[in-house]
Length: 179
Ligand code: AMP
Image 1 (tube, rainbow, N blue to C red):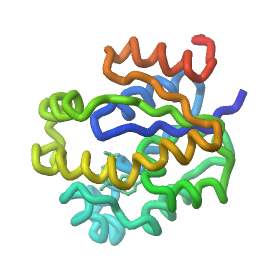
Image 2: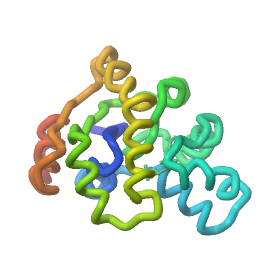
Image 3: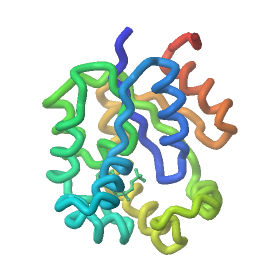
């Protein structure tokens, strides 16, 4: 079947790692808004310049900017979104554009996130920025858990195990048989 999937979870939950494995397993187009935005910053585009202060401080880029960027890349079907939507307004915009098959929540407690990100070394992984990204996650993104649960789309997965364990749990939650 053709999946249109969303991965949500706090920063450091392993969304990017699981997304690559799921992309390969299910043959999906993987879109990470964080990667798209970092690419714009690296190329010093006009968009890159506009989003830099938000990304550097751990806050969300304004909905309109990130939604336009994501929708411009979205295939009609067979996609896996990692890091989008991050607000109910983004979820509404996506719903207007396409149908979502399932939403996987990678559930990882804050303390584990802080430990994991301490070892990653990305510019916005400094302790005070991580604290801000977690605060933003709980305040602005976590409402999506209820949003998608109400639509019957949410699949909650314990994201605190090893990469392999979590991958198996995600496939199981989706009812997808490994190739
Ligand atoms: P990520 O790589 O998903 O952890 O995203 C890194 C940063 O990019 C976030 O802290 C935000 O500043 C920005 N960002 C990525 N995706 C979004 C989104 N869907 N909405 C708003 N900001 C985003």
